[in-house]
Length: 423
Image (tube, rainbow, N blue to C red; front, side):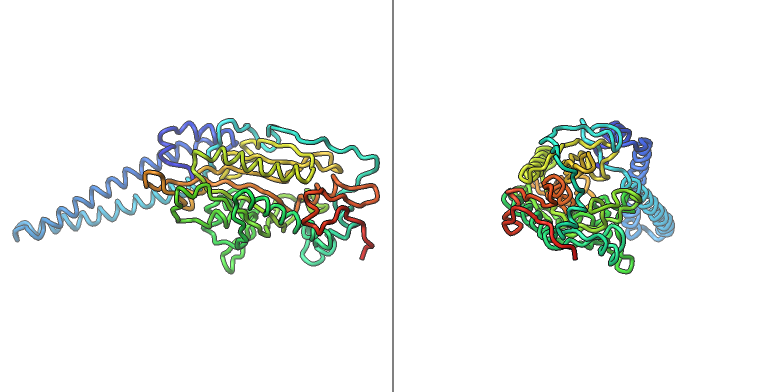
């Protein structure tokens, strides 16, 4: 959540951010009003309680003649104290509820607008020109015995699939490659739980505008995660981290689940938009003043992975209206998909500043010994969707697929994936 002190000092910063996101900036005045009334109610409660204590002490020292009047005053004060405490509590709850619905403040320089208003920061590689009619990733996957969406639908329904043979090897190879690269850059590999409590999901900002994307198990009141960002953010909830340990970096390997609500008719073919996938996610705790540089480092590691896999891609600065609740800024890397004739997202990296840390009470001890809220950042390093770009960009006329040299050690040394007889 946003910092109330910062809001009091500079309310226009949130107003500008809300307008950039396409959100209602009237919430700023509502927050300021609730905050002012809550602080006034709390002050009244504390003054009344101090008076109550003073009268209480006076009762024992009072004469019999004075005692009855003091007891009556003490009784009246007790009722006033309870009422003031209740009012302060009610206003605090209302303030917290409104505050929980306010997204992070957008970083300066983020493009305004919606999903189509991103800024292209860089384009790497040239989309390949084929001297044959290229196949899409599903046709290639079926030829290779790698992807089976028909049986996925039979077993689990639409947007599910099986990865078999070299398809399974590709996914595991990509994840292994990503984890090893992350570890070499100082990340601690983690296999986290994929079911989390409501307070963890809420704390990371996924139960607001994106709640309909999340699978919920009501019988257990647990949520299936759509990214290991969620359990990794909750990993240090309620803790104070040693300042000299920052930045603390984790690389989470997990299965992820998304309902894909509202995507009816979109990307129904293949494995671009699915309910279940695997992902390696980088997650970092650092000092807020170091977050912007760390954000660029995460982007750099993503780009190194894409370069190693010889994929043409572009880097975009996501527009404010397309940012998630917790993100102050987000960069995406989008790979070229030949049969679609466009770029599709393979990675994203977000700077969440201290927004998640405030909600989850994650702090670090500063040089002066005082605890301060940390900043959190996240970034994809590999996911199942990468198979789409790999197959389509590295396909050959006979339906085989060349394996990029950097990936070969992770797929049993294979240089080329060959079509197999259909089963």
